[in-house]
Length: 196
Image 1 (cartoon, rainbow, N blue to C red):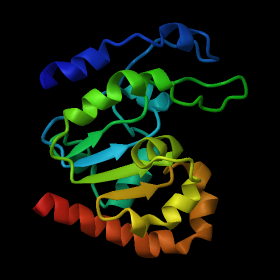
Image 2: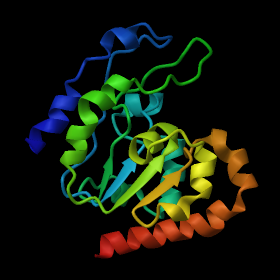
Image 3: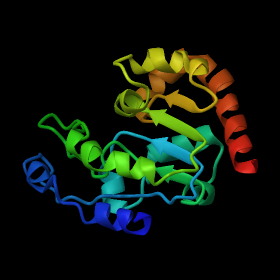
Image 4: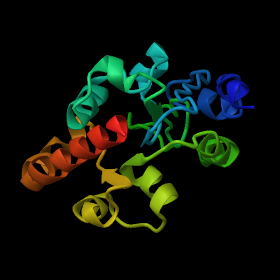
């Protein structure tokens, strides 16, 4: 039952031993954020440490940039009846020995993703953020930059996006078409979806 699914995900502890063995040695804290009314799906990678601490997705600088890309304020973005935020893993995976984010554990998507997608019957637009989400939703192992450059092939139903992390600032500066062409098309499509 859909009402129970977020609670079941919140109670998930499948990765407890895996997370305990990371450099951060943290406990799982799944962050499910969706309802069956949602019309837009933000499909990302996995929560970062700030999201893990806050218990709310994209509660960090990446989230601020993503909301700016979408032309949405916090209230609109966090309205579960409008936007479902479903990463490839619901928990912060931890940091590796060199301090980088670990990849989302595949067991999370294998356990939960099909159930969550089935519980979201009203999705009209998917924002595929980063390689892991793009592989799941679009198939293949196409580099993110190449997939984003080919965004018109997937629109209007799917917009492949780079991660809104500060790490991609240099790429964004080298690709002015992203801000000049893709983002206005994305905002226009969001308006259509919400006005429909």
